[in-house]
Figure 1 (cartoon, one colour):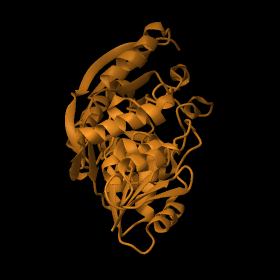
Figure 2 (cartoon, rainbow, N blue to C red):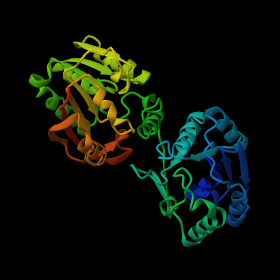
Figure 3 (cartoon, rainbow, N blue to C red):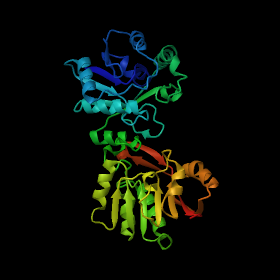
Figure 4 (cartoon, helix red, strand yellow):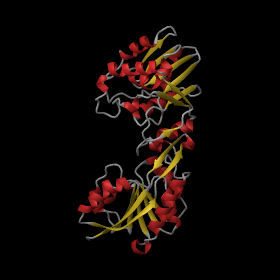
Length: 382
């Protein structure tokens, strides 16, 4: 049996997998270099660390996963015809470069014994399957490696590469996943690109009690203003239609926009035959261009987190905008802008749901959902 560790960069092997690489026969796959290092059972931990240290490089934003097939070939090269345990990054690593290596390794080695490191997880608490606490000798070796081989990374500005105290664990934690759990963990830490849409319902709107309460409260809030806004709404960034379906069930005509083609296909399927819904691909900027009919209100629900130009709201063809955000984002991003706006005034503010701790990915991890506040904006100028 051989242990094969697959990492993006050399320092990752020591930061998260030292307990694996210092005992018995082992091999190391460096994805950024397409290289394998072999460690016989006779080699001491100090010799192994010295070999790894020679491959630590400056931060390089071009480093990334070569894909499932090349990684599987490197694993086969390292293991030969021996039985192997494969260890790699978490698909939910907040550093996407590492998350992709972890995901691609598991895809390439499907059917094998693949184990993921929890590592440093600032957004999720991941439930591990087994933990390895380092003794003081190994901790001293890990710290010495960091100080000698990674000195340049201690002051690195990029969060992808900087080495800080939370990234040097004294207990290394690991877990198994099946394919569905792996893909959901990977999508959960994605943004709004195709990685997030790689699985249906990545944010678990259909199964999360918190999200059900949030969506029910949001729909009730919007529908409660129908006498003021009328029967025609534009929902910007409708994702897969979880809120859209609730609004249509309340008798409202909805123009649901979704730029991501994968989400948009699922959105169209979800609302087909359910009422008066039009689905289109516009983003917030596209809705400000000419030719769009005036609507009773535009809905910007949990979507103003991505640096959009808030000045675009002035050009929306409506007199009402419903915004929902986490309270911190509402106070730090929207309210300062609103304080200087001559176009909009605050008509109403509500708490839709308070914060709640909740499991995700069928209990593999848990996190704090930070709550959602609603703010109704009313136009003050024509």
